[in-house]
Image (tube, one colour):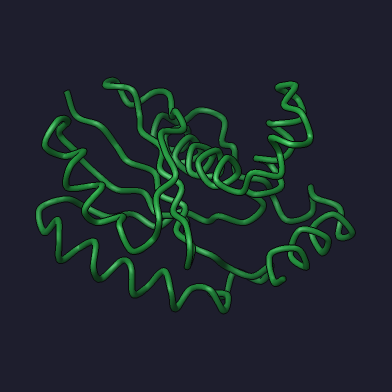
Length: 163
């Protein structure tokens, strides 16, 4: 059965998520070093048929691409070249790290586990993919409107990422 892959791309690490065969649920799959992501996806595609990639795209609050968009654009070119027959969709990734941290807290993960950035990356990839799947099915989206996250929380997460 076909699988849709969700990707949260970063300079160091890439969070990867996968849909169930029916395209209803997203599950966090893995965190991979950025330099090895294409090889990882090729290996995955030997076991499962990938029907589409959904890549988190970094945008500012006004909807314009953020500074990190240039890195993602480069990755999108490499991904399309490596998988020419597989469509690639961009999905707004605003607040996915905030939502990932909230999901870890709500799930009872200890503070030491929440500090593991690879966990945040793969959970963020699952949130990105689930938002896409929800929009496809006409269901509720996981995408958070900009006014739903307090500015103080948004700034706190943004500052942490820059360090």
